[in-house]
Image 1 (cartoon, rainbow, N blue to C red):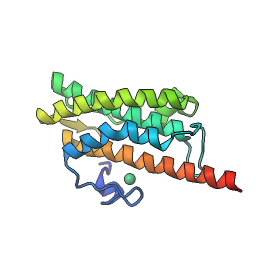
Image 2: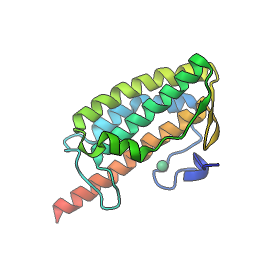
Image 3: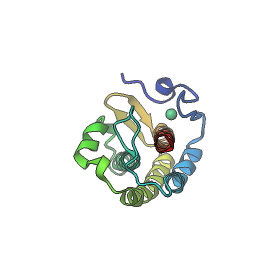
Image 4: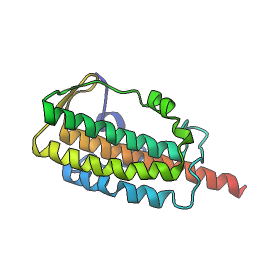
Length: 175
Ligand SMILES: [Zn+2]
């Protein structure tokens, strides 16, 4: 069984300090705020800034968060609408490769993120109301509230990655 959530990252997350004890409603509020948070974070930036330890640039992280939200919103909607609860894992690196994340213009990535976050809030709110539970191939039972927390963490964690990249970019240009 694949480790996930607080057991994988620690509580709070040892990197981004995300507190896993938040309620599903708080997770939804956080995702509702993600597009504005990310827009503020990257304001005035190009999107192609890099960190030597990370494969993805700033715009790529935005695209990853977008696709993660879309993927889970779709899975919860599928289970809610049809009762099909079994979901596979997905390979985020293959997706990044297929979509050429590092070449996505930052403004386009942010445009997509806004729409994905809105759709996610709709889908996860409905899934919580109907107590949707997924059976994930690698993680086992994933309740709608587990998905809400996991996705809120993913967005918070990658905001932290983007902060690291931009801090590195600023140090490099200061030299
Ligand atoms: Zn984290």
